[in-house]
Length: 122
Image (cartoon, rainbow, N blue to C red; front, side, top):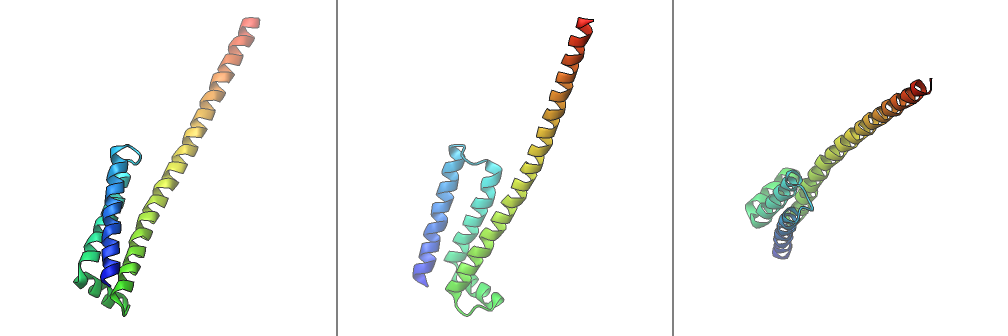
């Protein structure tokens, strides 16, 4: 169990460093980094607390605490991925609406340009 918890501790610290580095270099926006940092901090807290692992194992009915840790990590990252799926869906909807507005503006622009040319020809 110690090897797994030590690995998860190292993984969570690495994740925190990677996210902070990505924010610093503007590879990830701050509002999206909060989810990753929160997940990494929860992972760090769970991996360092044997009591929390035992409680998670008892709550889920898992007999082994390290398996409870893996289960908790999986659930935690599924929640983060779900949040990002919602963000991506919202961005896609906004992108479609923006493309439609641009198409309408182009249509009005070319329609107005065509009217001016036909009026000038008369």
